[in-house]
Each structure stands twice: as C-alpha cells, then as structure tokens.
Length: 482
Image 1 (cartoon, rainbow, N blue to C red):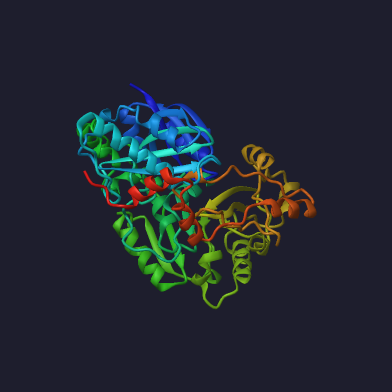
Image 2: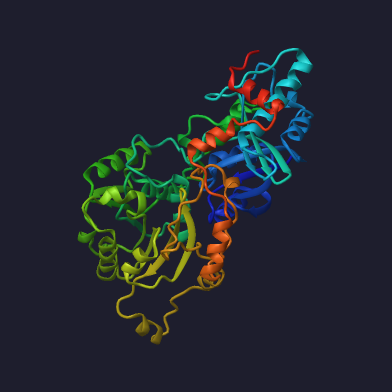
C-alpha cells in the first residue's frame, strides 16, 4: 500500500533530490520549497532513508487539518488514532515548526501536541506516555503553515547528513548532503578524475567516491527512527541493507589537497574510515603550487570564505581567489572547475566568466555555485572556431536563474534568520525585491519588527497570554510523570 512521503533538503537541491527519488522508484513526485513529496510503500520509505544522498530527513505524514490556534491543534491531534503508531509505554518527542502569525512560538504548539497525545492515552488506559529528548521511541513532526497543520512521523531520526563515516572534522566542514548535491549538480559522470584543492576534512572527496562506486550513504549509519516503529519490518530492511548489486568499479582517481597539514591528516583518516582509500588520495599542497593534471579531470571545491576565514590565517581572501583564477587559467586547461563561495567580489577575483551558476545555501550562508570552463586561448577565439561554450541545458538554466537578494554593501553573503539546517519549513521562499528604490527599501525595512536577541526570545517563549496558557507552560517546564 502506497502512502505520501516527504523528503527534506536544502534550498536549490530540490530538482536533484527529485531525480534521485524517481530513479529509486518513487511515484507522484512533486517539488516544493526545500522538499520533495512522493508516494511509495514501506520499502520505498526505507530506501529513501538509506539511499538518497541529497535528503536531510524523511517524513511520513499521518494527519492534515486546519487550526487557528494551539488549542485547535490539541483538539484535532487528540482525534488521531495514536494506538496505530505507538503504545502507552512508548516514549516520544514532538518537533514543532511553526510559520504562522496565529501561533506565538513553536514550543507552545509542541506543548499542546504533547498534551493531546498524553490525554489520548490517559482517557484510553488511565496512564500517559513519557517524553524522551535523547532517545525517543517515536519522533513526531508538527508543521504549521498559517492555518494548515501537518502531523508526520519522523522516519530518519538524526539528520541524514550524519552519514557515520567521519571520525574527525575540521573547522566549519561542508555538509555531506550539500557536498553530494554539488557533485550531482556538476553533472560529473565518473568518466574522469575529480579534484578538490581545498579538501578540508575530505567531505567532497568521500561523497564523490561513494557516488563513483554507487555505494549508498546509509551503509555507515547506525540507526534510523523507523526501526522503532510498531510496523517495522526487520527482514525487509536487512534485504535493502545487504543488497550491493548496484555497486560498481571506478577506473579513475579522486585527489584532495589542502595547505593545512592537520586537515590533510583528518581527511586521510575519514577517507580510510569510509573504505575508499584505494581511489582517493589526499596530499598537503598550496593552491599556488597546483599543476596541470596528467589525466582529464573535473574540479569541485569549497574554498575558504566567511566563517571559514580561519582556515587561511594571515592570508587575504581576495588574493586567494586571485590565485585560484591564475592557477585555473594556467594549470587546468581543458577542464571544468566548479566553485562555491559566498561573495561576488571573491568570484570577481577569479577573473573568469562562469558558463552557469546555481543559488544555494551552505548552512545558513547564501552562496553561489559556479562553473568555469578553461580553454587554451581566449574565449572569443573559441567562439570564432565554432566551439559551443554553453550547453542547451545551461542556457535554459541561466535564463531562469534567480540570484540571492543583495545586501546594502552589494554582496549576497547574508546569513538567514535561522541556522537550523534540518528544517526547510523555517525559511520563507526567497523574493527578490532589490530592484526597488533605496528610499522604498528603507521605508520597508523600517516597518520590519526588530529581531529579538536569544535572551528575549527565551523570555518571550515562557510569557503567557493568560492564566490558562501560564498553567500549560508551567506544567511542561516540570518533569513529566506517568
């Protein structure tokens, strides 16, 4: 029997994730904001968690309804047949994400959801289940968008970017889901070598190796939330886990370089832990010493920027990007280089025009992922010789490209209000309004409410609107008892 399934991802990776789901066998695939919905059976649900490289979390919706406030959430959530999904001795956790003016904060909505489940069981059995923050038997996702409420079971548990192969990390490593997404966006078909000259802890290298050999990211994972569900089919999941029939050989190599000796050591340990040391080589090397590869190769890299500035102590970042451009022009002739960064001036210092680009997020930081084609000679000469610089797909993509909204300084390296990578619900769809006049922008910005400090947010969270709400908050601040 097929049911609706939701896979969450980063903004900009929705189409990549949709293609993965279709290839895996998902039906009725629809793309949304930071998510892809589809239908499938229990096997498809398990495979989505185990096989998808660009999914952050997989949810199984069990109820949808309208609610104008938290009390209506309580009333309608209480009508759900919770005995189908848990027992009275099953611990649970509610993760609430609220995007609605009618709800003061997500935590209070979660409180009312917990009350609904507790009261459902108290009326049914005379007992109530316990809440567990660290290791719940059932994870419940409550999503509120205006008056639309969706209650889902969290099938993944911890974010799926936590693959399980890393033994150590460098400072500000790239997210594994984003790294896999960059590789898939590049169109690398595994028919040549891959190079990352700023490899850090080796995330791009390892994700590329897993893609090259078609090893699913779930093989390293210790557990999924669905393994605790009442209807868990251990035999079915064991067959999925042990099926390596789609794995393949890789006849090329993957190279990683970093100027930091500690980063190189960490990357080497992670590569070994992932079991791909036979096709991945990591060495200490400055980008200024980069030389023309002997074999055809693609470059995919995440150079230092923003919060990663500590990775190049004593260096000027703009000079670093100038060096990147100089080495590409003189030591990567005939190759395609993909670079992700967070500021227009960094790309400008590379000194080349990209053939295509994507607007993405690295965590909460707005970035662009740009492709550079390096020719032997000038671009004009290539065009005169009839060389088609851009593919039809790149032309189509460029025509639809929407950049991030710019800051007052002209850059688009603005961090979002939330830095929570796991919730696509928390970010509004991006709307480009920068073409409006400065005076109009100032007037618009003056009407925006001032952002609360973390202290003020916590204080507001526990401020009650009335005596009834105060009692609810007070009850949930105490330890739950059976």
